[in-house]
Image (tube, rainbow, N blue to C red; front, side, top):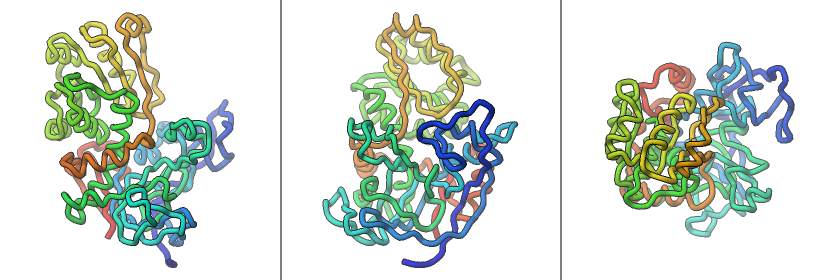
Length: 398
């Protein structure tokens, strides 16, 4: 398939901060695992590209929908010195966008569909993991593809989905056909674009957090898309009490619709006091930090762990942030609590499980509050740096 397409591209200057040293996986002038220490003066451009062609184990996808993620916003956002906010793997220039759904246009001869164990068919609705793990390094071989040593990430260091077409390895693609039972065409692709952030939440609370048992209590800090998805997953998994801590009332209302039982506004009431009150002094079995402000929220979590009667609490850190958490080791020791980092969404059957949950009633589409065109993406990415009134802005391809 030949032709041209436009893509929303992030461009930035390679200008390392004093003291920065290239890591083993960094590429001078092109790629680093420490984005906020290197990339300066980010700007968004709409550039023209050739439509890519798939290799023998790849699939060409026509993008139907792609959500704006907080990482897209933070890659395009500069601090007072001009450096990007996003701290992780980045390589520019790259087309942004990784929360995508679309249809198969063309597939290589070795590109097999995991749903059917047969070659992909044109027109099949699909989504993809954004983490392009190699499958050959030690972390991949040990079953930890989120920590691949040769990792590429769609929309971070390789071209993403704020465009019309992209090529993706077949190994990371998942069929959305099960969603056709419950969703009409556009809603199917909106739902499909929410699989990736929902999988981030699933990985955090189920895989990394160790899951919950029916009757456990869970507290989610931050009502962004990942925090909202965690509310739905926790309730579906059997939590007796799901508590959302969120300052914005509209997001809190979404959380209550998706499965949260209680809302705390930490700007208006004391977080720790309210958690202990709701739980009759028990505290919680699982906390998920999804605010990106661990230095602000952790003291409240720690107080609940210390004063609550629940032992073995798990605190799962999901949001990306450079800030350090003020941790008292004594609290973790005495209360048998643990702090766990969660990155990514790949492996352990996470994607098919989330798709099956969506196909059987876990509707996440209310999170998508605004639909826009390709040419509206740059202004909306910039707007989200200061305006959080929209929960999830979704690019819908024409």
